[in-house]
Amino acid sequence: MEGIMHFMELSGFANVTWGHLIMIMVGLIFIYLAITKDYEPLLLVPIGFGILIGNIPFMENMGMQIGIYEDGSVMNMLYYGVLKGLYPPLIFLGIGAMTDFSTLLSNPRLMLLGAAAQIGIFLTFMTALALGFTLNQAASIGIIGGADGPTAIFLSSRLAPELIGAIAIAAYSYMALVPVIQPPIIKLLTSKEERLIKMKPPRAVSKTEKMIFPIVGLLLTTFISPGALPLLGMLFFGNLLKESGVTKRLADTASKQLIDIVTILLGVTVGASTQATTFLTPQSVLIFGLGAVSFMVATAGGVLFAKFMNLFLKGDDKINPMIGAAGVSAVPDSARVVHQLGQNEDKTNYLLMHAMAPNVSGVIGSAVAAGILLSYLMKVGW
Image (cartoon, rainbow, N blue to C red; front, side, top):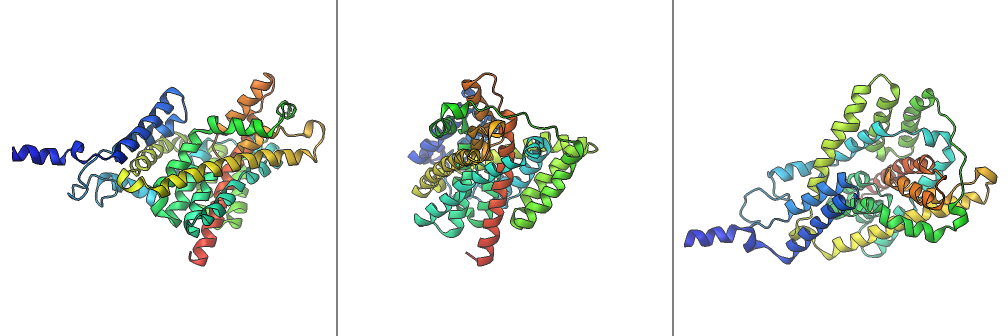
């Protein structure tokens, strides 16, 4: 009988709390949305299942080395790639190897929309400061507005590792919910006439231009923001592998097997980091709310700046302001949402290629913003 009682004390049933049950429910919701609604399944399935793994109750003071926060456990060793920012540059390598920057090169002015969408980062940064977060924490929370999970993880791993779980979950959640969050904001800020604007087809971009771009892009962006070098260096390296035409095997590995492996490890460990006893705090809930505000402001900033640009453009040079919403770096989901909204208004209006320009520039913009924040805050020692 004593043995049975001891066994029961060690079981999950004896150690479960309401926090564990709430987080398990969150994990199930993530998996449900991924499978039934097709919301970023490559992200939400690993994260959702990771949440389940991280919230199986156990006696944390037994030294069994099974929890993600216990030194020496398998999950803790895998989580090392998140804490030290190892996974994000590898994700950027894969993104670079699968991204075509032709639409950005054909119409460089659309890069301004990607820059405008970063306003969400800095407004949320100031809001977080006003709510009592430290400078480092506020910067890490603000980057959620870029809708770029790897960048958010990279910055928070350097500045606020104690918040990395909440920030990562918030960033990836809003990336997955792009089809839900962005359409109402876009419709609110645009008229039917604006949504019907047809943009002239992008010009053809030569192979030489596409090969030169990652080299020039690396030098320009990292001279401006050296702190973004680990991310942008890998992004442009991956793109050169793709565009050079002589490293197809390397480009295929980076854009397929490598990014898939890293996505699995990143998703599961980020999900497992939501262990209820550590994660479920008022601070985490506040971060989630600030992330939503950041993402909505970023979307609105891109749309409004596109409308501002149209004040100086005439005829077929005008921009459909909906593509400004794609300035957040949720590639390619934001561009797809914009295209679908355009199709709903006019079946002959094809906005996908146009929207990809601010979308990919948003990836670069959020990394540059993160690099600037990292360099400044590390220098002043906050």
